[in-house]
Length: 249
Image (cartoon, rainbow, N blue to C red; front, side, top):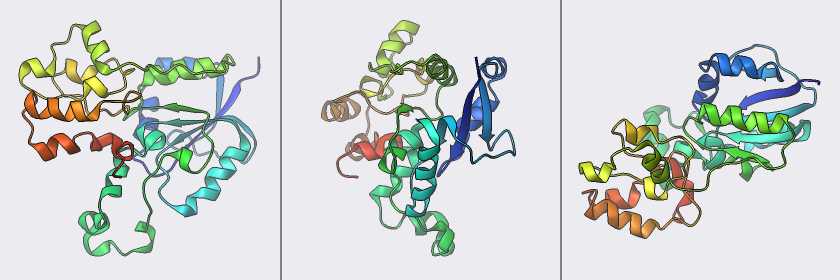
């Protein structure tokens, strides 16, 4: 069976998801028995303008000037996968959507330089049709391998969990962060990562996004009354990775 030609592309991001793959070791090497990387900036210098079977896109869509490049990738790719929080939802980059002076705050006197000019941070789906999304910051390596395996075998639907992180904490028998007097977004956060952060004593920040129809009002109340967070912090807590989810973005 011919190998599946895959290419990795990056837009506004730290490219941490690509780095995760290069650090994955043996499982990724085994994957190479079934896929042929034809472009992957963090691991190879070769590039291609030929048709590709699967395009993996990392990073958010932040400049109209990038639309044509995205459209060209879409035209060449049989399947487009937006992977990582930035590509799937806008990620941390979308925090700038809530302020008008982010450039000055971040870049100071260099804020007016042309190459720093950008629009709102949006998911890749705001510019082109995306077939599948893999959430997370960075995306979970094991989930990525599983999704690729499904694509290689010609599945018509990629499985992404739809239940909250709390389920995975229960499975691991992790003590709830609220029982330790901490806060956590686990009740409304999308699972699939295995809940490593709460297991290490770190509150979930919803880097994979939120479950369908999350009760954010109730979550804010829990953050204030049980998580001991000030009202403003409780309201804005979900903005770290899901700023585009909020209706006031």
